[in-house]
Image (tube, rainbow over all chains, first blue to last red; front, side, top):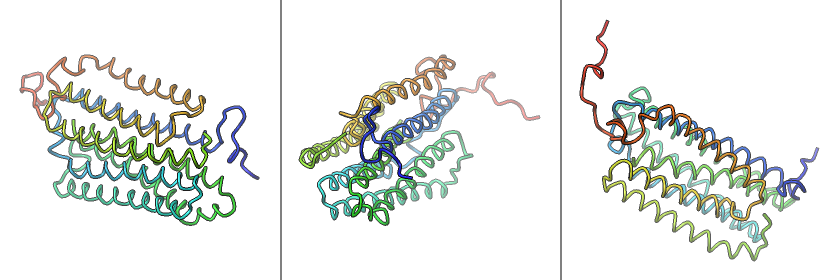
Length: 196
Length: 123
């Protein structure tokens, strides 16, 4: 059975079904991360003492990761723009770069985690380290999820461009919505966990 | 949101400008953190810059600027509940809010060991 409204928009919402679905999913994600941010605020305001965060985390590595994720957001939107301009080879280039940026982010994150483990800083060490691993770990899982989708769009999923280019372009657009959201979450995680 | 190829070409320059702005704001956030401001202005400034950066991503990369009303209303409802999620615990923990007692917002500080703060004796 063909899924309705994947190319044309629904008359009532003015949106395609995948786009509406992804926006509603992202709304639920806002509440998920919101609950964890709220927990962080409660833990910190309720604590009698709190470690100096900047002496535990690695600010240069996190700044590098911020630049990587911001760059990946640009390459993601450029991959969609390339499809809109009917330039499939540029799409492949930009989507490939987006995937590599995701990989780069995870590699930097792995170094960061390795540093913590080397210094015997585990989630059980204190509340800050606990919520640091929880928030960055959950965000990292979202990066992995986005990379799976982006990798599919770059590889096997790209065959659709030949048969249904408009539908494929819409798929890339909604994948981009998710990827930009992952970037957006990091934009708030970065100052909260690393700089304050 | 419908886009023609010509629209997209004009948008590409906007994407690049937003990218540069995001990098500049990132550097500002990091630079400000090295100023060792008191915690209240540091929190406000960091969250303000993060909100500006987040808005740029949502408005331009996610095309929220010019998106259909249905999406905007759904997100407005989400934003309301997001604020509520923060407001309820803050009300219940009102006496712990920044500046009302020497607490953990002054990071790296330990409270003096008065009897009420001393660890309970081991049994």
